[in-house]
Image 1 (cartoon, helix red, strand yellow):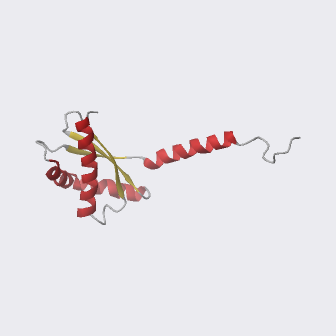
Image 2: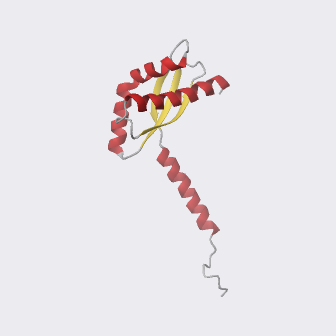
Image 3: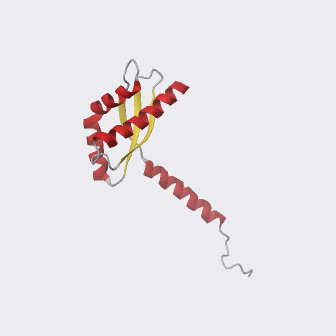
Length: 123
């Protein structure tokens, strides 16, 4: 990824988060913007988000973001000062799945590091 793509991605990630908090306070309370990835031509941005809560909250957040996608794009494009405002593609990140995988690996490593005889006495 080029430096410009990285800068644009960081700016969009921050501005999407700010726009959500500013314009839709209650609806976006459980939503966290986790990442943004910009296409090489800067015309599309894949914005990743995570939702705190269960399946009902995730479904509600997905519908909410789908409903406000155009308004969100307009809010962000005013800040970007680019010739063409990039199209926002919102995708749910499975952050909890990644955390669970890391925790499982740490648990497995911990079990391997434990001695076979926990009392410490030689028999």
